[in-house]
Image 1: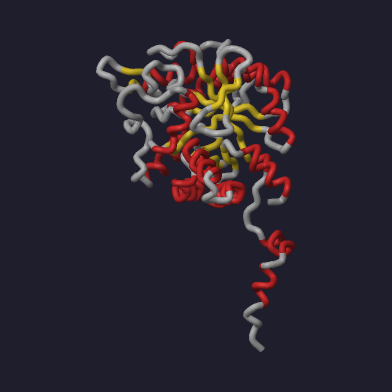
Image 2 (image 1 turned 30 degrees about the horizontal axis):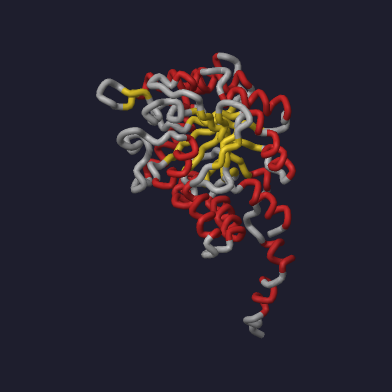
Length: 327
């Protein structure tokens, strides 16, 4: 006797059955909330191109961290906005700067949190590039590595659990690992922006950080969106140099790359749902073109399904609330 063709549909329409057979599940603990830390005091500054996202001075951090912790989000990625910028990225090495100060504050008041820090000098340089410049405005890879290693050490000394080099300079993971180990920070993890494309989806972030390049673009050191096999070479190099976690950025436009890297390496994978992805979804939701909550959860599930066990997203708190409600 043939199997009734409508019976499988009835099983799939049962919520209990759907939950039993789900292959992928998200949990709030997998979400990482980016935080923009600015100089000064009593600041909570709205970012026009990222509705609902703010720049915080250290003394205004507690409410957003408490809100995140209530819904199970305990990991944070910190970006610093200095008071002054110059050619030498001087403030990147200031142990009293926004990021080291925020680390110490969070470790004192929220010791259970995992603190990750962006290690890059673009927000500290007056020209907005991720590396030092030669006299003819070419990126100087090796001199930049020295600065990045010193920056990572400052973050580790302040108490960072994870440092995340996002510059895409050659050899940066090795430079950071060597410097950290030499000073005894063997347990400080490196989450490498292993595969970072020269993407048009970074625009709102650069508004938030006031860090757009003052000339040219970053295509000479970030990856060409047309490149696929290069992603595997970059990822394998970072594994060899001592990375503990690999990241693909952006997330949704590069799900195929995320899966390729996940299949190729034996390290935890992270993906960054970047500012342009966030702002696009928010704008469509505000205009009534999509159901924003459903789009948030669908996008994050797709990123997880493609291979990311951790996801950096500005939706972290909202998504965690939805997960706890069972949406």
